[in-house]
Image (cartoon, rainbow, N blue to C red; front, side, top):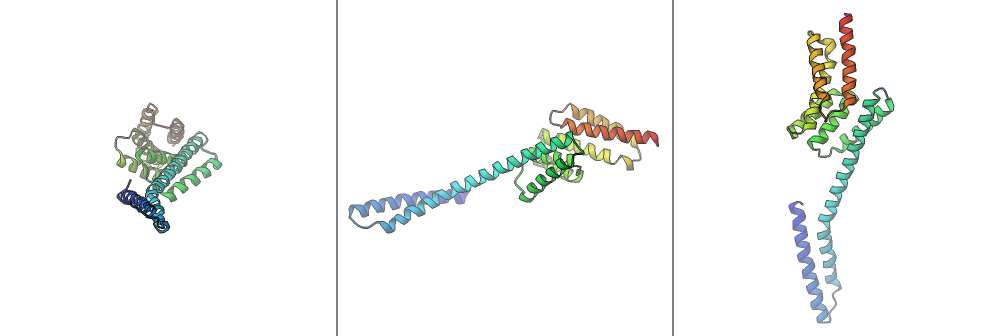
Amino acid sequence: MEITEIVLLILGGITLIFSLVMIFIHIKKDQSYMKISWLVIIAFLMMGFPLISKAKILGLEYSKEKDLEYIKTMAEALAECPDNDVLKKELEKSLDKIEQEQPELKSGELAGLSEAYLVKGDTEKAKTLSDSAIKTDPTNSKAVAVKEMVKTQISINELPKSVNTETQIRKARSSINKLRTDPNTNKAVLYNMDKLLTVQDSLRKIK
């Protein structure tokens, strides 16, 4: 709770006690207390504001969690069916929504978004988010795993321009095999990486 909300809560409590005391005095003196009753309403409004504010924050947090869970589901589905345009458009739509809302994200949540962009094929955005995830919490195992996945995918994408292709392929394959043992990685994403790497290796051998 912020300082402003605490101050309002305290002032609201004081105002409520004062107004109730004044009403009691007016009743004892058989005087009208209608004007003072407005103080009771003001007191409740002052005390209620922090609670309303808290409820709003909780509502936004719940909405964010729902959006992130949906993005995760769409990303997992697209990783299983990478050629499905309907899934890709739905994932893009969900990612655009969370980009516009710009909620405050934790390291693991940033890593989840990074993975979603990786599945979508946007390695640049995936790298930016994975870097942010690591910066937010360098010890987050999910963030570390996703950063390594992004790095490996970028390495595979750059193979056609590489001078030392064979070495780069070997490193990428070693990275994929290592990532397969990590419980924080999406195995479907790694399968697609390995598939693309095999294609690139075959093209190298033909040349």
